[in-house]
Length: 211
Image 1: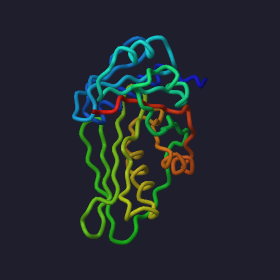
Image 2: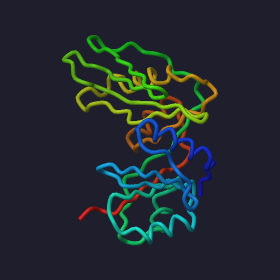
Image 3: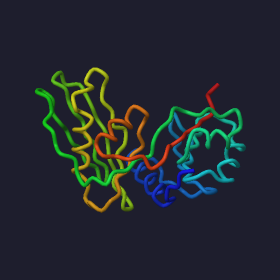
């Protein structure tokens, strides 16, 4: 079982909520609950490790749009859940000690736009035809700096745009002492590993399928 400092997980979730304009997390039975109330998600819980509280909540909930997330493997999460829960594709909780990334020029015709609102920075790479080719956001809170929703449109991949977004967001970090964190998909893990990121723990997730 991988150990991740619960305070670090809470700080990540707090910054993640800021980045997505969600309510702040609250402590709940060994995990951290966010009452999202969005179209896709009613509530989410993030657990630093398996515990009785995770199993208790999993057995209580029968409705869709609730998510349980665990700093642990899919197998560890599955073992705590009733059969009605469905484990989602694997993600990874990652960090880096790199202070900054080297900036790289964008391909000809592309341009970067940055938008800052309080502790949140959003970066967009605009393609020559004016569409958004890549984008992402970052938020800084409680000694952590988190990257969120780094995405590149399919037709604009393999041009270094995702790296450019990461560089632009990283340059917005006010405290170089802040721990940098993100949650990567299986596809994203390789990109971030090439940029010096390492996996702190698998990040498993499950929900109850909608009817």
